[in-house]
Amino acid sequence: MFHRVISIKQPDGFIIIAVSLVMTALLFLAGYMVEQSISESRISKSETSATKAYYIAEAGVNEAIYLLKNDAAWKAGFLAGTLNNQSTARNNVFDANGSYSISATSISDALVDITVTGFHSIGDQQSQRVIKTRLARATNPASTWGQSFYAGGQGGQQNGNITTERDCTINGGAIHANQDFKVTSHSALTVNDAAVNSSNNIIVNSGSELILNNSTQSEGEPSIGMPLVDFDSASATSLKNRADQVYSANAFSALPTGTTLTGITFITGEAIWNNKNLTINGILAASDDIEIDLDEGKTVTINNDENVGGGLMSKDDIIVELDDANFLLQGVIYSSKQLTIETDDNINFAVTGGIISWHLLLQGEDSGACSITYDEVLVSTPIDPVYSGSESPIIDINHWEEQY
Image (cartoon, rainbow, N blue to C red; front, side, top):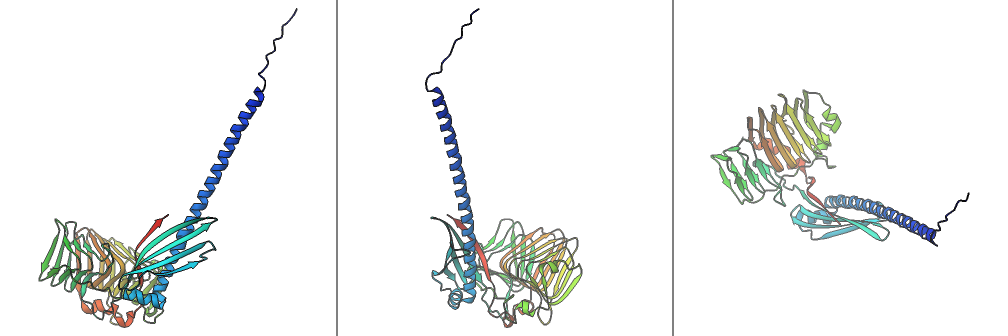
């Protein structure tokens, strides 16, 4: 029996061609993966360099603040409003690849725009970040203070406004906003025996009321400089160095309900007081924000002390939130930046003396009582220039970053 064997022969070179195609595909894929890896590495390095450039620029902002405080030429130009592209630069920031440049231009007395450009290099590539900030300082050595309700911000429409969004009564003194004075949100502001003044506009929105009893209103009034306060300089007369007790932020917030403190109490850091009764016979001051949050009938009472006065005074922002609670103060509320008073339900907010802030917002439900009654002695004693000296804090009122 015979079997026929059929042999099928592949075309010449087929295997070589197939192997070549497979190898080409593999090489292409490997090249793509390598390129992707290199690209991702470059992106990662670029992002790292950009982050470093940002922190380098922030370091430049800190040096600018230092120069405005301590360098004779920078400080004099800042206070006089004469800085004109005043500049400086620094190399080898953090490492040999970092540098920044600083430029300062005055807007007015004690109000300046700072531009800092931070650079960081990797090889032949350089990342850049630009930070712009507007810095200000209170400069008014007021021996007596005539305002019951005051916002002293300058340098832009977002600064120096008073906005009232709930019913309240102001008795005596002068109300003054260095920008706009606004009554909004269907609220009624009653003013007795006082002047309502604004360096820009007085705005009463539809449905809201500004009720003037033996009082006047005037727009376009000259700006009034914010009174300076020395919180924590090395001077013996700063609030911190005159304090009867100094607490850390944690130690203060841990104090029990019903605590009574006498004289000047100074908090290093944020002063946060949540839903506990507190009595201050004197001044409560902080080097950072002050936040008071009360409900369920709790009360914070700040009484005038015959030696130091009475007050709630912050080197930064102050926030007072009341929900069926009470805030009673004899003296001054002084916020170097923004003061926000927010109320809800049946509250009692009563200040005898005055309120001073860079920017001021009063908001919340209309239930309960809200009043500010001017008293020249009570508002003026805590800001006495004998103690305030000339070292009020430099505050950052606008801060933004440009990316490249």
